[in-house]
Image (tube, rainbow, N blue to C red; front, top):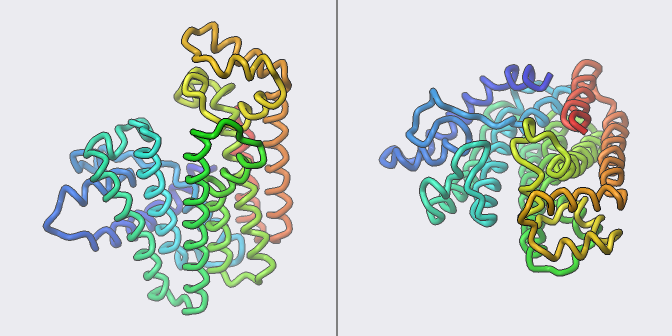
Length: 338
């Protein structure tokens, strides 16, 4: 179903993104390639035939929420492009801060062109996200509504930055509570999804109550999606996730399952202080998490936030067809592979 939505919205979204990219200076073709690359429009040589687009969950959510709230999704395309630019800005900078050399199975921007140029590319994507919003005026969106959309995008930027600060801070913090972790992912992972649903409903002219229900739906979806990702990082099928559970374990990544394990198993906490070098260490790591009930707890958290998302969506009273698609999208993103 998600693939069908990507295909439905993809052409119009690509056309508008490419229109915004014409704002880039014509005398710096390599810069244009560097900006198009994280968007998945070209490879590192600038060849569009080797494009590798991401899932585009955020623009799809925005456009589908717009339809569900009674809008014409084509009117909302500039906003969908804006969140796609903004999301990729955050990924480019995240990769630099996390020293991550790959993204979506390809070399990260900074790995190809250096950290300084990577920062520059991220900054450009950030600017283009707000430039993209200007297209709403040409599609008949009133100034008051455009301002509300810009406010929502700005708020999500503040939350993204707060969440990223906490994520980086936790790397040097000896005691991170589950509550603090949930606050972090609420900013880093859920805030933009919440803004997508909010913006889609706002552009459809939905009432303030319905807009808040859509925003709550996006927030709860984002929380469930990130916790599900934490679960799959340890217990997912490597053939589907693209990485072994040993990756998160050896990097000592602080995720919800790890934090729960630290709080509920002294043996696990002792083991966590030591480097996991052998496969036997990884096996023991997972075994202790199982014994402490961590796996079941994490599953319950995914289910909890999923139920909250569904309740918020029902409260938003979405249009029949698009609403059903949003429910299906929720299932497709959250219920597989657990």
